[in-house]
Image: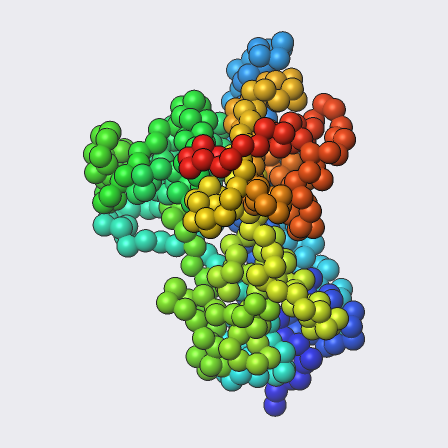
Length: 462
């Protein structure tokens, strides 16, 4: 006989646990199911562990630059076992915290096991049948493993398996020149590895503006990272105790020899083993669950939140999915996914903060726009910190004066971006920021200066 619940949540990523707490507080009986590690990608193999590793790499990088700041740290070397232990402690603590909070939650039953739909209202886990009129899917995604020639002939790492590495690869070859690949590239270069990035496209992080892509490439190359672009036909093979990566690039050698390979070529949703067909839940060609503007699937009473719904691939979009679902369900709100403004960061050093439209988006829109660009080398706080690479770039609507898009590549860019993002959500004119008094000395205080330099948007110059 099926066990009845007011709500069933499959997965404990960034949306599932807060939803369980919200529904439980509303007096609902909740079952939440986890088949692996509590906390999902962010806690175990994504944001928290990678940013912990990046922090270790940054500390080593600054120590090596001691002479720039008037001190000498001597020979800086990495103890990778200690680096990993620090990462494990922080990441593991977060995962245990998620599990503990759920197990202590009133009206909440925590179940460990693989969940599969047996109908649109029932889920089977550990040979038990659970039933509810409200089922929420929060199963996340995993690293994509492309069908490269020779992929099954050589060992390779993904963003998940590299979390187990407690040694320094002699030469790490990273296949994929986007966000995940670039963060690991700089991290391991600072740890002491030789690093080569192999990217099929004509430039790194292809979704960004060309000036952003070029500036990030220059930052990485300045640290000794090799970049191979236009790798049209990537192949892998064992070669004298190493791994040969065939690239066939327009420029550069046709082959790169490395000690280890990291695949960073995208993500796929964890939806293939949920029995979605038994529930009648629709997916797209890539396996993402199709949802409407409120995260509801085509089946009434079933929602999909986070990476598995294809409406965002970030921790913050997953958490926002939870907020939308909970507010609409419990407060009769009218919140929509389409109301949010695209925003994210690339956590290389210096970081890139991005929100709203790119230059390409502005051009495609055809709207009259103004734009300004300002080098970080002219920002006092950046000069004082000795971190002057990058720039601030802002585009605004010439008629409404609302901010259209921002890119801040520079020290503090991942935090400063929120000043403008919040103004965008308020639909306030850019003059709100321009006329505000900001604290000195900060990066944010230069935003009025940048906005004071707005000129008609010119293709490629904004």
